[in-house]
Length: 109
Image (cartoon, rainbow, N blue to C red; front, side):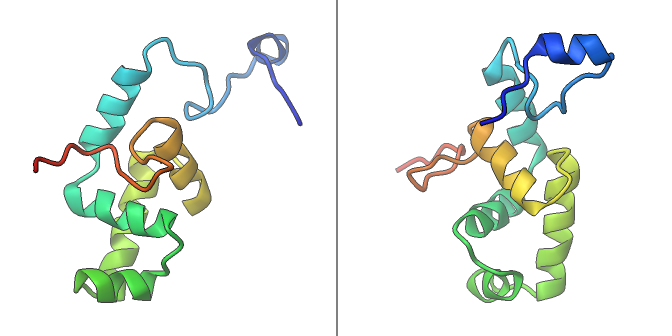
């Protein structure tokens, strides 16, 4: 396993990507990222994390595949992700999605 410490970044003058950089307050980062995603974007992201394709998500949510692609584009931009797997990783790392299948959103029962 490759481990890069902050000292390694300091030596070469670069900084880690914001999604993998250590954060002093993870709640603040989660709040910022979570509030930037719309409810529909969060839904699309949850289905993507469960392995659904764009057309499958469109059928499930009753929207066009083109609309799903637009949501995916917004998700990647808002999470500052380079690709879809990275966006899913960021969502899990920041608590927007949970491994047990729940998302970071609060659901009233």
